[in-house]
Length: 198
Image 1 (cartoon, rainbow, N blue to C red):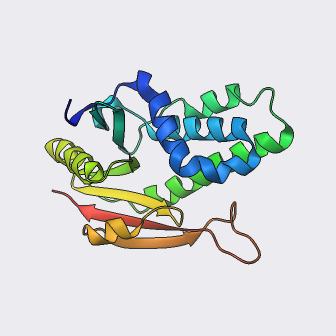
Image 2: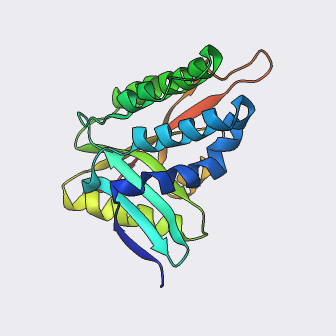
């Protein structure tokens, strides 16, 4: 089977969490396997709002890339899901997961305040095979464009390849420091971007 881009099926969210674990799970690994697993699934659920703007790239080895977007006003059940999975965790483990959620919601809120016009937010974009990422992101942009969306906004942090967006014509519109993960010796920063797509 060659690579095929299709609408993301929400019952595959566990597959997305496994892909996320390969990238962000290592950071959470210091807090234990259970926290890492819940974090990766929560991040995946937090980022997926509607199958209308959620794509997957799949080949014979399974899902290799996903790209999700949301429109201002969209909601999901990720916060409820997380709270249902806090039982049985230590207070420290719970605080790690709630701090991550706080970071996501605060940074999203900052980006939302910058979004203008007919805009969407790229909420999740990950690829584990070279070339699949650009293909799926372009497919998502085409889908958004068909719906009259003019701007695509996103934020990404220092653990991600933010240079990818610069190379692909995105304009940096802001930068900030995440106090949740900064230390006395090192800032954990994030950058906000936008691109005109229509």
